[in-house]
Amino acid sequence: MNQGVIYAALAYLAWGLFPLYFRQIAQVPALEVIMHRTLWSLVFVLGILLVLRRWAWLGPVLKSRQLLGRFAVSALLLSCNWLVYVWAVQNNHVLDASLGYFINPLVNVALGFIFLRERPRPLQWLAVGLAAAGVLWLAVQTGHMPWVALTLALSFGFYGLMRKVASLGALEGLALETMLLAPIAAVALGWMSWQGQSALAEGNTSTLGWLLFAGPLTAVPLLLFAAGARRIPMSTLGLLQYISPSLQFLLGVFLFNEGLQPARLIGFALIWAALLVYSAEGLWVSKARGRADPAA
Image (cartoon, rainbow, N blue to C red; front, top):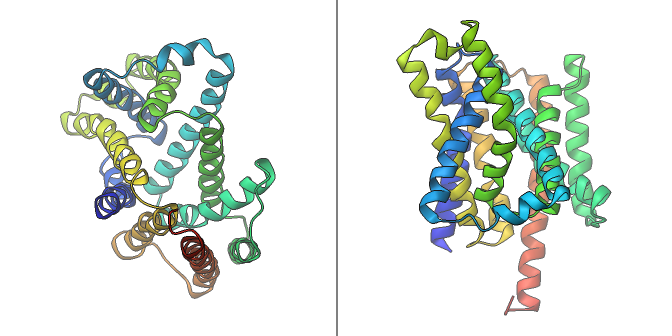
């Protein structure tokens, strides 16, 4: 149990500190950052698979058009999520990014109800309603929907849904997704370099080093998360996931000095209340089931 908590907590800690990394390469356009992240993640993941000799999954996957199609969709959703997140960090919207990952668990509840015929419990519906009220309040206060937060929450929610119905290990799934995206990224980067419009063409060693670091930075937290998820209950994992957006929120307010007006804070407070209801209800149900079936 303790080992699993450490693995999962380290994964969420790394994800929560991602804004520090993307601010280091703020001079590189977000789209180019995603191209590099895709290519170097693929190189790093393939290296791990080579060391582990885990290739048996690849043959059946390549023969299944349905599975390839699902992973093509998940790859597009993942790239969309990455692009919006990097853009948000580079353009002083870290608070909006943290909001997206705060509401993501509640988006998952709604998607499970719509697409998987899951039946949320009454308190889960209350949590979803509170979060919706918070988003609506933010929209009224700013004069527009918080599109960064909603795009991140929905893209990652649908990504999780696609990975749920197209089951493949965390490492193998990331390898396949980056394989599908890599040809596009490689051609685009090659053209940009030929035009002299990329970090590769400029030849800045420091920037190139930070871009290469995107490979392990993407894969290692994912592996830590997978290792932790296998060792701890989902209720514990559900609580640990708030480490990441909480760190992003703190970075946005105290390090990047993004304004948090009192009116906007009310919207965040509604969403935090929703997460409190959601987490408390999940813990209560988990403990009740444990008492009813100790073997579980």
